Image 1 (spheres, one colour):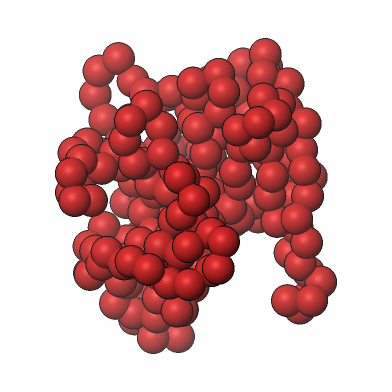
Image 2 (image 1 turned 45 degrees about the vertical axis):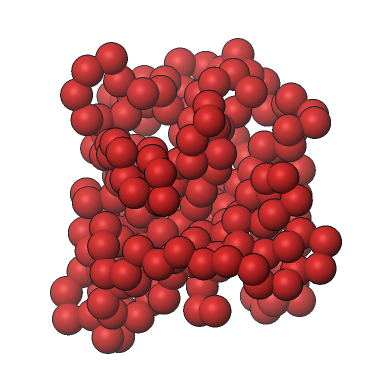
Length: 206
């Protein structure tokens, strides 16, 4: 395992988004663990595909996920690590084949600076909540009525700065995230209570 970014628990299995970040070229996979024992039980590789797989979630009978791309240059990458404008949210069909894909609106991508979309989770309001790498906030998105760009409808503050997030399916207003420390021992999980009637996003002001 190289870089597990976020995960979701479904039917006793822990599904984790995995990538080789920040190695080059970018490769990604889904890694599956038994939630009771944490034994590794399954894998699906995307190979060199759409970017760095950073999150996944199960919603409305389908798997969804995000492939991040970055404007930052890392050691083994001769150019920007994929270009953040190539960041995509996808809906998977059978056998993890990509059925549909959307990009993010430019004002949200600008929030990420040189980084990208690190976390995603479908909320109880039927909207998709996305996080960047660093900002302590989540961007509330809807699928567009037409076209390929997700619609940004609101921004909510979080205690944690970016990275993976997950809605608590048993507590409708609770979303969890990671507070990053200077070392692994300093990292901790935090809970955020989110008001679902969020303030509308004003792309010009934000």
